[in-house]
Structure formats: structure tokens, C-alpha cells
Length: 202
Image (cartoon, rainbow, N blue to C red; front, side):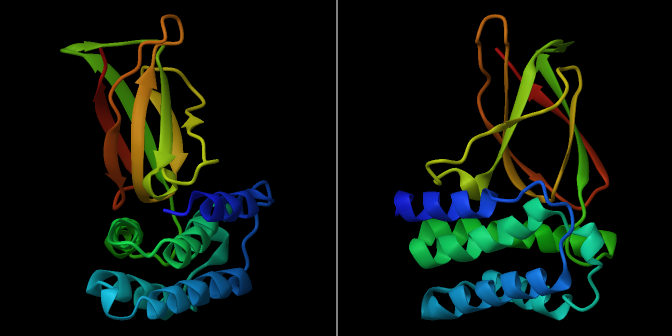
């Protein structure tokens, strides 16, 4: 991995995250960057990655930009930057899985690009629901960007709730009183309007 390059890419992408509106031109640029990054992989590009990027291109015109968040757009742009900076098999497979999850979400719900899932996380110790734990999430493809940081759910458990863009996320929980932290769990959050999960905690 080239952490400095990906850190710089992540920093640039994080600029302006408060801007709510995404326009079709920005989407077109992001998809174009993905297409070029995948093309440069040559024979190393897996079919599912090529098919996912082709899906984005084919659904660009029918996508309602108002349903695409800036965080979703930045995920596409970061994916292209990661493929350019570190075209290893691990990175390629991670990006392919992330884009495939986004495509799966859109195809299952019959929408264009974008969308979101209302996620509820219930920390549990055996059969007991645990209250007042803080839950965190991090998009998996960001895990090797040195300056990417996890985001806390706005509410404590149980349940902790957040609305996330479709994708693959690391989810974990921490007791703010003791600092005890659960193991990270990888979740594919896609294909549903709402999702509720139980998260084992120590």
C-alpha cells in the first residue's frame, strides 16, 4: 500500500463533505475516473469489477442525483484513487467487493446510484442487550488510508442508529465508561431500506 498517496486522496475527498448537493456532472467525472483506473489494471482486473463499473456507467443517466450523497460520491472517487495508487490484489478485491455491494443495493431496490440504509446495532452480551455502549463504523476500503478515522453513531445503544450509504463496513462498539471494546465485525449493508444487527460485546 502507498499510505501517503491514499492519505492525500482521502484528505482531498474529505474537503467539502458538508455540501449536500451532488450533480450529474460530478457523478459522470467519478465514474469516468473509475473506468480509467480499471482499464489501467489490464489483465489483473476481475470480471465483477468491470461489470460493476459498467453498471454505474449504464445507470448514470437514470440516476437521480438528489439521492446520491456526497459521501457516496467520494467513495467512488476514492476507489479510483486506490486502484491507481496501490493496484495489488488485496486492494482490487476490496474495491470490487465494495462496488458490487453498491450495485446489489441498487438492483435489489430497483433504484439508480445512491440510496441509504437505516442501520440499528444492538450490542449484546450473550442473550442480554447492553445499553449505553458507543458504536463506530468505518467503510472497509478506507481502512488502509492512514488519515481515515471511524465515525461514531449519533446515539448510544441500545439500539445505536445511523443512516449509512450502501457498502461494506467494519462495525464495533466501546463502553465509554470502561474503554472495553468489542471485536470488529464486517457487515455488508445493502439491499434493504432498514437493517438491524446484534453485535457481540465482552
